[in-house]
Structures are given as structure tokens and as C-alpha cells.
Image (tube, rainbow, N blue to C red; front, top):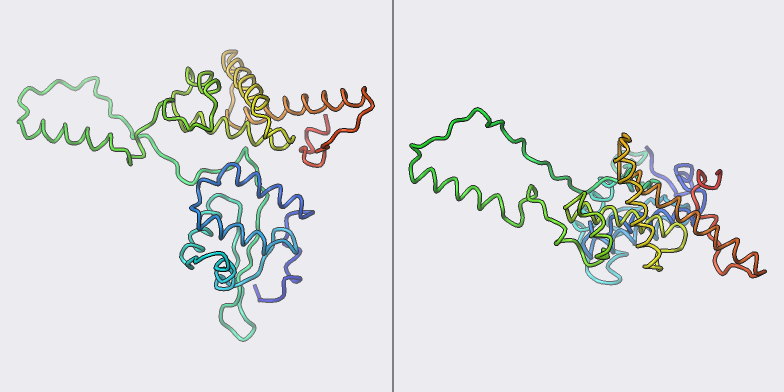
Length: 287
């Protein structure tokens, strides 16, 4: 791909408006903000600002972007490049290199992708070790003291706090997750990370209908949606992605609440203070 002015690459934009682009960035950060360090977050937001002229497209050298970030503090090139690797891995960003007509590399082209919370990937995924089948294994009575010491040492190493294979129960759940939601989910998922993933989905669904600041409403919808999901499983339903299914349930419930409130305002001949129809997914509006 040959280098050129930003106008030459505007057809690569995947957003019909700046508002749609900003909405995608807000949804992405609602789920993945904690994946970035403070410096990486500054770099990410600066790249977003450089991508405003044609929504989701920026053409600039990394050195130029780093220099722009340093208006508000020192930021190294390695920090910026680390942010790019994370953003690419999380699916929000694509990167293309350009070359000069005379040869040699020129500026980069950064392309932001639409973010779908139901398909978002995690920065890292822990894998559970495969347990050997020891049903036919006979106990060994002639183990030496050295073997016993090695076994104990292995167990202690396995339980280190930085071991990704060690799961954390519900008591490790973040304070950002209400205790009531934690209590509703823990009989099914006694895992702090999984409980937080479900609640984040509920908050993102609330954001799409401008209810993200109404903590009581978010909690109520999150609990009712999870109970509906649990009932589906109880009835024998085959659900390929429970997190995505839960997110869709939350969206439906916020959709119903929003239009109930809208109708209530119309019956009182009042104008709604906020109308977010442009934020509602098309598949919901087609109901």
C-alpha cells in the first residue's frame, strides 16, 4: 500500500459517523479499559483523537503520535507499541504499513474496527491443566522423604498468587460488582472472573439505553436476566455462548423499560429529556 494523504484512505472507514465511532470506543473501553496501563490508555485515546477527521482512520508515524502524547507527560515509544499490540489482539484495531514510491517504509494506517461485546476476546485466557485418570493407580508405600518434599513443594508452587491456573472464588469479586448480583450468580459460577464478566455485559447493555448511571436498574435487570438464563439451562436448552445470550437478554429488558418510560412520558404530554434511538441496535428496532 502506497503512502498518501488521509483523504486517500477514507474509504477504509467502517463507521458512518463520528458519533458511531465514539460509541464503539466507549463500549470497547467499558469492557477492556483495565487491560491497558495508564500510559497505554493515554496513547490509545490520543490515537482515537487522530482518527476523528474520517471516523476510525488515522495515518501517522508512531513517532508523531508519541510526540503528541508527550504534551501531557513523558510516554515512550515502547509503551505506544505495546498499546497497539493489545488493541490489535482485542480486535478493535488493524494496522497497515505503507511505502514510498521511491522505496522504503512510510507512515502507518490505523483502522478501528466496530466492536461487538458478544464477540469480544480476552487479553489472556487461562487453560485448565488436563488431569490424568488415576482410578487404576495403586498407592505407593515406598516413597522416600525426598519425594514427599517434592510433592509438597509442587503443591505450594501451584497455589501461588501469580499462577493463572488458580481460580478465585466469589469472595475475590471486585467491589464494582454488587453483592446481590454476586450472590445470585455464585451458586452456578463460583468464580470471581466469570461473575465480573456477566456484570460487565449488563453494564454495556445499560449504556446502550443510557441507563448506565442508574445502579439500581442495572442491578435489577442483571439479576433478572441471569435468572432467565439459568431457567433456560434448567429446561435443557443448548446455548453455545452463555455470556452472549445473557447480553441479549439484558438488551431486551432495557429495550422494554426504555419504551415503557417513553410511552409514559407521551401520555403525560411531556418531552423525554433523553432520546437514544440512534444508539439502539437495528435488530432491536425491527421488532
